[in-house]
Length: 397
Image (cartoon, rainbow, N blue to C red; front, side, top):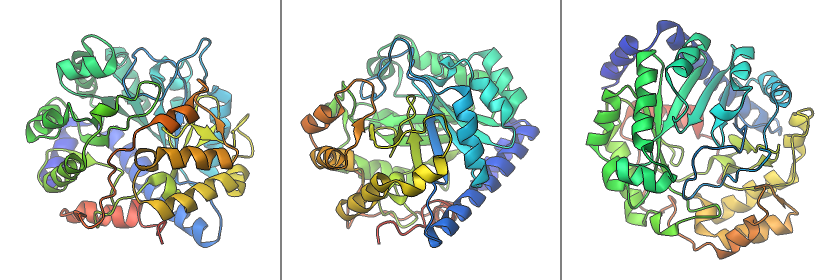
């Protein structure tokens, strides 16, 4: 199937964009991980990947979303992003995730992409603003892969996302990307309501037919001011998702991506491993997008390397969480997390001032750490990639 997928990508993606993908994302990403490992051996710390929520503006209102819009919006300025990305490039990083809100609402977005042709960006978007003109511009830039969010079929998408016609708009965006020969992905956060529709060979085949080259599965996390915990997956459903991905990877017509398990099927948290962290629209250096508290802020973008190296808070979180679970601590023990953050002197970085109260009231739910029921990768390619390029850090001892 890898041969079939490779042939499909060669036929469907602009060769110039493929070259950028291979050199900036592929080779550049591997070098970033290697340098990350080397830094750890020297007792130095700087993550291999950073994700930026560049604005809290959004044109949807999703259940389980942690982003709170404001007026005026909180946004990372182009000048600040310039300084941060320059520091990251000095550390050997070349791959960045761009989130929101809806990042296409940030007026400086395309200038950012254009100023860094030697970097590669993954653009997390709901697709509502990704029209033919945007797709054409992304093709000209060549260093961006759009990742379009699909949160279920027609009825479920509208229910989850607080809009009308959201599923159709996402499919339209996928079509524009396909017509412009972009390397394109689909992201989906699996819930109790959507698992039967999304975790299926039919769905995988359908979005591949429409032009998706990779599918990134997330486990729904009931966070934010409207968490909807009734949508959270059960332990059995999480195992169903894991088993499906492992079985489908050798034969699916696209890449199936997750950031929850290593090559042996053991659970992990990228924030605990230290490989990736998140910058909020107000500049807060957060552990991951859903953990909305912090002690450090990027400020004007200077001194970022020192802030990561000297952060006692990040180090304490990685150490304390690794002793409790390999899974998602916000799902398994939100009350402990709130207590830990308070004791560490972290501040609420959400912009709504209610994060600690939300954590105090959250009902714990199943996470992807299910000891004794690990499902190892079957695909040699995924097994090798996860072992050597992404999750081989020994963060859990």
